[in-house]
Length: 397
Ligand SMILES: Cc1cc2nc3c(=O)[nH]c(=O)nc-3n(C[C@H](O)[C@H](O)[C@H](O)COP(=O)(O)OP(=O)(O)OC[C@H]3O[C@@H](n4cnc5c(N)ncnc54)[C@H](O)[C@@H]3O)c2cc1C
Image 1 (cartoon, protein in one colour):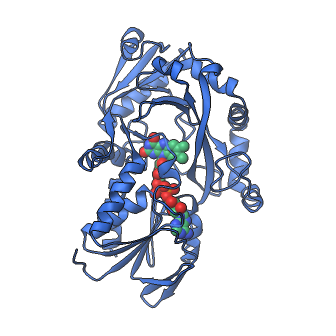
Image 2: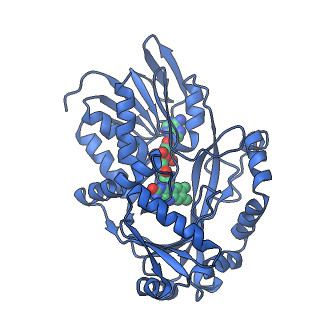
């Protein structure tokens, strides 16, 4: 593919970095992607729930609302066009107590405001979709899909390679130095030069911003999300996707049941602080990261604001019985004998110094490029839209 001669270096080979690289290549840029791991989608993009979210949860007008509504369609279309598995299956959000009903109605209003096809249904109709569910009322959302996101990343990488992009695995970016109007990017193997860079480093996005001389307004706090899978004997209890009504004060959707694109059923993810950026297990503990987290006033403020939630999440993480108890609110027949641990993902959630979590995607322009500083869920869903946004930001410079 002919380029306009402008070299852009993308840091991070998750779904956001690869989608950004594709959008830049389509605009005629000479693109290089550096990924520190030996394969694409090694972190969040390969350790998530695999759901293309419809866009009902997010404040109208936010990046998340606009990009998820569009992305839910575009990522499924992209997957199907490239032979990657994806299926529009819809989902149920269920109110299991009378206190949750007003919040369910508020969610229905928000879905309407965001243009998401969703309708309130009674418990009898909910059981037509999910015969084993327990609820007072439910919200049926038709456009939600399940997608093989690592498959999407592989397809993006193939497209990039075919278009002549330089794809560098096992290439951590160690330092970034301005060289006049360009940047020099140090890797263990060589120094790469670029006109612009795009930081899509996920769990390390704040550190990479600092390498580039930018003081980020946030720091990344890693929240581990642990999964269980239903044993095959219990899989018949869940046909599709069953979600609780989320707590509006928290950025996570609550433990839910998801029938993945491969047909298996997952339960989770919970949300516990990880003591390492890539802390997939309790024993993944970085003293340096723990000290940094302990010294971060934002985290102490968050813990003071939600002490019961924090303790509850830790207890649930340690006890399968407690995990199963939360699932029983959705599907009463499920017991702890029906579930087994099934890995984890670590969310990169940006936090301000005052302890508030950044709700929306945060994409910041700086001297030599663009930094994607908050791209948690639904960023896999919205990856193609985030990519267009970043490409426009770079063009505006
Ligand atoms: C448990 C969980 C469940 C989720 N469920 C969903 C869902 O159902 N639907 C949805 O839309 N979203 C979901 N998400 C969110 C979604 O996975 C992320 O928003 C998305 O994957 C972010 O992509 P990314 O490319 O920004 O980050 P990542 O996939 O984390 O990629 C960043 C990459 O940068 C690399 N990197 C970091 N530092 C450097 C460096 N110095 N040099 C080179 N490379 C570097 C990393 O190795 C990594 O591969 C979930 C996330 C988690 C953790």
